[in-house]
Image (cartoon, rainbow, N blue to C red; front, side, top):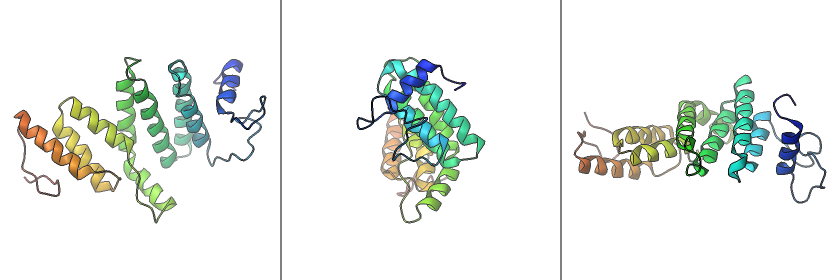
Length: 200
């Protein structure tokens, strides 16, 4: 109520409303129906996703995600923060050709998610002990961006960390491709073992 105007709140209610809901339903604040969210950060992250379809909604989605980040931090929710940063990367990457700052903001969100990766991995393994870790968008986005900027060693380093932590993805293949590009670029390179680990 204090962070968003009445007009913004009504707009967000409409964005969150499903086609099955009555026209004047308020699923965010009153008429939840069958929708259940374990945390406020979880609900806000889903709302931000609903607000990511149009470039003119980007500012509102950014503010919603800032609130989600704040709520997750307040309760030390590593998994909630992981999902908030995932959505931040998706939002800004979607509009990187529209907003000049979008690429840098997505890159910053990637590093926030990467710094949190060990805690998020632990939380995911506790919640889903029989399932492998999913793809880590922060590692993937940041390493891809570094590769485009020809920062091959830094990109390889991120891929090695992602692989060592157990995040899903073909990290070994990416490491080998990056090493090949590094060799072709003429930059100094250390030899690598077939597993993608640097030899000193």
